[in-house]
Length: 424
Image (cartoon, rainbow, N blue to C red; front, side):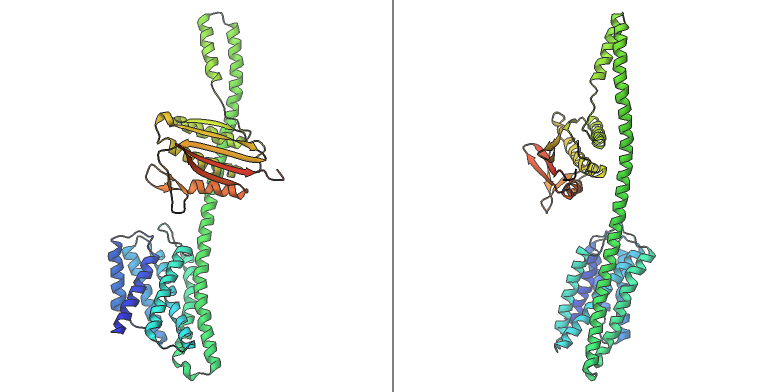
């Protein structure tokens, strides 16, 4: 009876671990039904472990086959990603039994059921930890053949070495104490090496992916900066043309003797004089605010800007874009959901006692926080995102400043303060 219970328990452990590892991935059918099928596969086809090397290799090969087939049938991922997850989970599952077996032999514990239960609990805990902090589980992830080889071959090599050494434990009592200690050390060494290889390679590839995404975002931001600087050049040309136009209109007005012509020229002068350009003392910020003002005009939002950013060269163009664009995009997004009479965004800022202080406020319909207490922007498509404000805060904190977001009456207010650098 206890043997049957242990088989049922191990079937649950092996199936639960892979289902949990792949939980963020989309499924082709009902996830619970798929999980039950995987559980039945392990329960009906699982063979209790022995110390035979060949049997152990075939058993874990069967694990890889079960996981791979299940992943291809029930998950919306490609073949290489399914194989990677299968090998990863199999190595993570298999390594713990030999490690606990050494522990039990060292302390002369002979309770096999206890060994199975403890190993199962640690297997579940390790999968939860790896998925949360180490392994990258993403439906958009693609695994190339070189990455698949680098991710799995070293770990499986170390794991197989562990199995080879572990197979020597069946006649451990007939060996000398020195041989026993050496075999135990090698099992521990290759077991821990497998865990480190699994974690290390995955952390490397995850970091490499994040680096590629950051580089792509930086390139995109630089491209946008170049476009904005070109827009700034056009604005400067328009300002010069605007200045010359006023002079020409004044000349025409003085030369004209027909009253209708004078009235028409006066109208042109009035229209020209109502054109107001935002000037902050920082050309990059000028372009950003001009761009956002045009965006606001298309959405029926009034943008009021009273800000001077002189002597703020320590803020790179990328820093300015990250902070202002993210905050203003959130403000525009919130304001356009309000009544037309309430659509006003106000920006104020400047130097106060050697601190650069900026305040952006906008009306809102509703606001939400995530589980960490961070404000999220509520998109019109229903998706909640707080990355813009989070990225802005990172830039501010990078320069030793602070950023706060709070609700004041019917306004959502973002304020940040950055101290002036000593060498600025």
